[in-house]
Image (cartoon, rainbow, N blue to C red; front, side):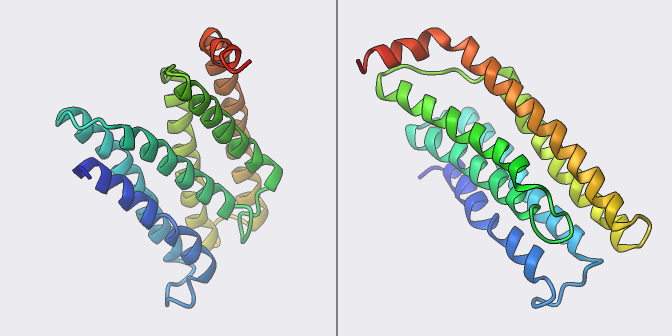
Length: 197
């Protein structure tokens, strides 16, 4: 276990507190007005560890097979947890919209695993990095929108409508990035599949 691994595990351990506090904030004595700030802090720490574990692993030459598995798994858990949480409560996102984000993660992860089992590596794409940034920005945007809502500066309908379009654009790009990833790696994917036949 390297330092980078501990940062990754920190992300996995911390992110369940996001839905717990989102749904049960009153039980923990957190007011609705304070809640967005608490959730923003949790997400910020998770995003920070996401950046920091990769930086440390490369800087200290601690890139390991365990890290290659744990890091994307932690990212998927974090994003899926946040967006699934938004399907309930005041945000009330359509769950089908969130499924688009989930299917992309599982589909690409399956392709990577299949290729890895055959000794083939699917390189990360710039579109995937942009997707991760866009999803992070979308999550923070929804949380920041909760602040004026709880201050009664915007209505619930305005909050939900703005959140929907933010996640809709994110889901649309997520699909496009998956298509670009598959097309760019089509030769390796075909090779991995052919080795199974």
